[in-house]
Structure formats: C-alpha cells, structure tokens
Image (cartoon, rainbow, N blue to C red; front, side, top):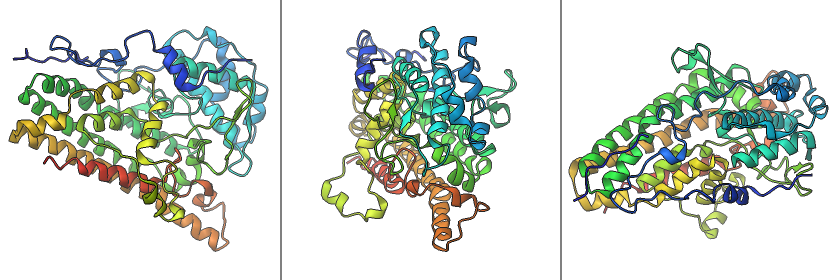
Length: 457
C-alpha cells in the first residue's frame, strides 16, 4: 500500500530560443517525475504561485533609473502611435546595458516594456507600411532580456497578461474595478478589458492548478477517493474560468478589438503583411519569425489537456488539402501549433506541462478503477473543459468572425470609412488568430479532440 498522498502546495551573439533554453536550464534536474512513493509531485520547482498560479505575483511598475528612457516611451506608446512619432522616438533612444537588470521581476518588466515598444514600432502605420528591421538600440537589449528569461523577443501572453497588472488599492480586491495595466496599446478601455478579463480567467484557474499534484499523487498511490475530490475541485475551477470569460462581453467592444487592437498583437510569422519576418539589427543579419499573441500561449489548458489525456494529433496532408484555401487550413497542424506555442511560455511553466505528460495516465486510472464517483468526476471535468472551449468559440465568433464579415462587406461596397472602426482592420488577419492559426478550424479541432476523451471504453 502507498502511504497517504499529500501535495506541497505548493554585436551580440544571439543563441536561438530553443538552444538558449537548453543552456539556461541544463544544470538543475529537468524532470520531477515520481520515481517512488517517497517523492510526491509538487508545483514548487515550477515557479507557480499558491495564490496566483501562473500569474506573476506583484509585478514591478518601475525599472531602475538607468532604464527610464525605456519606460518613458513604453508608458506612452499609444499616444506616440497616434501622433506617428513612436518610431522617431525609438530611433533616438540610447542603447542600454541589460546587465544592470538583476531580479526576475526587473527582467519581466523590461521584457514587457521592450515588447510594447516593438509592437508599436512595427505596426505604427498599419499593415501597408511595416518595417523590415528593428533598430539595434531596441533589438539588442530586447534579445538579451529575452534570452535571460527564455522567452522570444515578441509580445507574449506572459508579458501582456501575466506580468502587466497592478492593484489600484494594494489592499483591495483582485477584480476589474481594482485592476489596471502597467503599459497599454491602442484600443482604450477595450485593451484594459481584454487583458484584465484574461487575467481573471487565469486567476479563476488557480484551484485547478493546485489540484494537479493531488490528482497525480493520488493516481500514483492508487487512491481513488483523493483523485475524485481533486477532480471535483478541478471541474469547479474550469466553470469559474468560463464565468470569468463571459466578462469579455462587458468590458471589450468587438469592433475595437477587431478594428484597432488585433494588429498590435500580431506577429511576423504566418502573416502575409510581413512574409519575410523581421531583422533584429545587431543580433543577426537574417530575419526572424515569431508568432503574435495567442490564448494558446497560456499554460493552463496545456496542463489540463496533459492531465486529462486530451490528444491533439497532427492532421494528415490529404485531409489538409481537402479544406477550402480561404480558411488557410491552420498554417501548421493543430498539434504542431500548440507545441510551438509552448516556446512562448516561461520555461518553468513549459517544464511543468512536459512533466505532467510523463506521469501515469489519469484516464487509464479512471478506466481501471471502474469507480462510479471517480468516473463521474472525470467526465464532469471533460464536460466543463468542453463547455469552456465551446464558449471560447462563441467569443471568437463575436469578436473576430462577425466583424471580419462586416469589414469585407464594407470593402466590397467600396465604403471604407474611418467612421466604421472595423474597416480599419488589417486584411491579413481575417479569419486568422494573431498567433497565425486559421482560427475557427483550429478551435473546432481542439474542441473535437477534447470530446474524444469521453470514450473510456
């Protein structure tokens, strides 16, 4: 018999991201798989907060005074874009030494500031007047900070959501009324709404994250009762995530999201506006390609899929060729795209996903136990996850598909008017996510793979 399971709630040489991550994290043990009953699975090695989950606790709002030139621009990116002055301000910016950035929080704020400057610099004049090169006084420190963090040099979910918040009243609640952004992009209140609602979805998931070690250790110890209780907590948290996501309709205007915001979240991979990528001057001569922001960069659902046994298989070439060209078929298959998105996460969070995948199968455990309460708890988790993904499809339809249809209608009528916000949207992003995926095909495929888990036979 296993003992009871307890969780501890617990010119610059530029190295490509995958190689850099391998170098940075080669010395400590890479895996935390359970090798015996004396080594329970814990969240402690993965920099996951007991209170905030994957959210960065208490992000810094200011950098040391030496870096004030960065913050002076980053905190005024929106105004500088609207005045068409951001690029000229960045070109005058001094080239700063990143070695004075010492703490993890300093590096995260620096990455956030350099990220919003980069997105603004690239997209200041829209999709028809992009740039081919990021200037060295921005590119060099950006890549150095990125390499130290194990993140790519582009705005990610880890920047815009997880490390871009503070409480107006430090003693107040963690809610919409008391939260504000550290830096922002064009789009007004809808930008704040989009990032803050996404942050609240992350917060709602914390009980599910904390349940993961209980589930893994319970499976390892053949403790169906512990696993059942943990899965009940897990499903309640997923419902909380769906409830939080509903706030998107309250705080974000679809026409603003589609017509103004999305271009500043898009990248230079799988984007016809920048087919060659972007040269980071002083880093390397060849252009580099990076995907824009995507919900798939959140570690949450990757962890949930690995725990519940949701498999995102590659689509065959024959099947891909059968889709209409207009849908763009997911520039890469669903599974490959999701795997690639893990390179846009903090490395410790990516390792957590990998290590969950190495644990004994929860789905297999449920099948073997043939225990009615356990089976019901597992299937409720899958039901809630399926409902979350279905609701996300509805959100995407309202915020992307419907405005895209309106924008096409206006173009076809020759009625391109600045009065219609959606008509300002870049055509390269129609029916695609800012991460570069063919969005509805991608989301429906992910949903269908989730539904497959129901079959326990």
